[in-house]
Image (tube, rainbow over the protein chains, first blue to last red):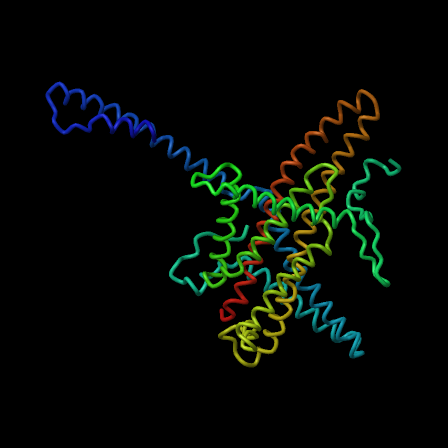
Length: 135
Length: 252
């Protein structure tokens, strides 16, 4: 980018003699060549950035562990609540059965919530959600 | 040293430094407590001394502090809107505490505070306590509408509300277990591979040559652990922001 700026800086004076105009033509040619080279670079950089942004195996693993913990937490909390109700009400298997299923549903809800795209916060709804804020 | 130097679990042991006994409870000042105090002290001292110059053109330390400030502020504003910005000191404190504690764990012979479930669970309970407390304080009983999603037919509403409540209660569990499990698993893996280097080197020349492989693995894992330390602090802070959003805007 810096090379391009110095290139465009040379044709600042608006008065052009014939000698200067042939010189600017030469500069124009050089600038066009540079522009082409830069464009090539940009394509390569874009491809590189695209490749970098693709989730690698480690990011996939982190994402999987995150979703797994969301799901397991739902089931565990459901089971704990069910067991607690059974313990105090003396309805031994039934509270556990019912709340284990509710916990399962809550785990699925957790996973769905964390993978679904987030709506913009209501206070500044005009702003679109810029990026997925969760890794 | 009386213990096996390659024991991967030994690093998580709690030792009493100053035994304090009040009634039946053990209030001893342990190595875990020491590192929590150190974490707070280092984070506070770093933030204070780097911003003391108040340069218009920030020095290196000052730009680190400013970057972490703006990073947290943007994160909170994205998740909870401008109304959530009153929680900035809370989120920033949690983020800095977890980040510094995780990074402290990467220093050899240091204790990793966040590798104990009780510490991360206490942090998560604090977050959920603030969410519930502020929700009731600000919206009164209407805050309970957060458990009632809009557009659900009446006959399955009790089931959906039960699922939403269990889902809400599972948040502190998943929040704390994720941070704890990442730190624990990472440090154990690191220690196991480093232990291979020690025990293989004891087998003579062939062992020393062979121990290059686990050594390379240890180096790679160390880099990965630094990433995990920062990433988990970020995830903890982001989820804190998202839960605070429920306290600030309960109608979704």
